Length: 595
Image (cartoon, rainbow, N blue to C red; front, side, top):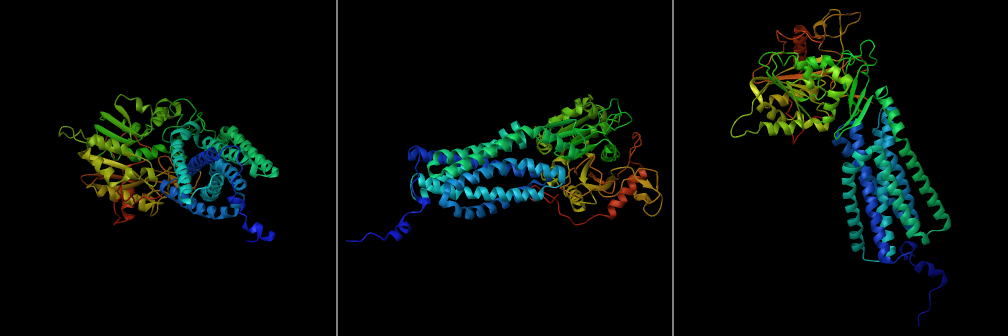
């Protein structure tokens, strides 16, 4: 006969609380199904937080590949740490899971608003991005061990089967969350409200599981504590939803320097416009009585500033309009109508085709009083045809021969696209893209490309030039300053560098550099970029043709405010001296542009 164990040993032989069967208000089968349903919801919410961080970081900082890599790598690392930390909570898995979900709902739900606040008021968001990725990753990682413990307490089963059920629910939930973010939350609610709503769903699911299904495992104090915590989290998230609109307005004022006159979220980007509220033809440029000059921002980056956009667009268009026929012109990008405005100043132009991705920008260019006055209603000209399409796809479809016939070529192709440093734009500066464009270029045609800053990003600039040469084109590089430059003689006079005590003379095509601050509240990523701390910035261009091009102005060129024959020639000579030789071409499979 075996004697019963000593009383002192009884507790040691008793299974730990984490493995004791839970006292549920429902059957074990239904309880297990409810736990898996919460796993599904929590996985969907976790992936929404992840995608929201990637999307917002790409919008605020740029370079989606880098931002996605940072968010995903930090989050996965943190998930491993969270899983290890959760081991200490397995003895009180229900309380631990309820606390983790409340914290995750609050942090994840408010992360978008906090990141935008850092961007708007502190001018940078990278540190906050890493911090939120780390905290959210730790909390998501802590979910799995606690849920594994809870599902085993509902009904014991072999470890392999429990893991299979848990991860099946988790992966299906991730699929739903991944699809809900771009197709439901982002277009219907926006990033800020979408994140707050997701946090609310997360808090309700986690709180309901613990406070109802596992309520008998909780002490009265634990129940009241979790109830108060969840109620406080939901109240904070609800308050955030109510304050989203005034918060966005205040943040926009902090970012753009004044109240946004137009703020719309299109299917492709956020479009914000400030200033340009005066009437008449001078409204856009901010002449007397028109208030602030018009400024157009796309995804937080200044793309058009009416105070100096004419310098960019004159330098982009007019050198390409010289040296050959110009009856048929193709503009890739340029949905604001400003490049078309300059092209239409030549009477010999018979047709202009503008290929713009975002119909929302085209709509504003046609209907907004300030922008339509600035572009002189160019998109309503009968010679202009606007196509809303991706420029790469359009070139590919247009260049495909039909019945063995080559499509009608263009005399001039103007590439008025965002900087190649933006990841989404790298394919529009690739060897494949320029190869497609060359197929549509007439034998004596010219292709001009806005290639970014030749000073702050010289390697990127000269990579564009090398990529153009890789498709068999000859090139000539030149540059333009962002605002009029003073001249006073001396060795740098022909290059347009300002010198102390100088007096205004002719326009310059070279000047101080634009800021290279990807975290700056307003980044100079395209036409009309923000003034630098030095007071000016660079725009770089490359003119390409089958025969060596010689940038010049046509004899019948209209009066220009920004460039002359002399300054254009000086800019070409300056660019040749700054050339970086031997750079490889950028391709779709090996992009070589980085912001």
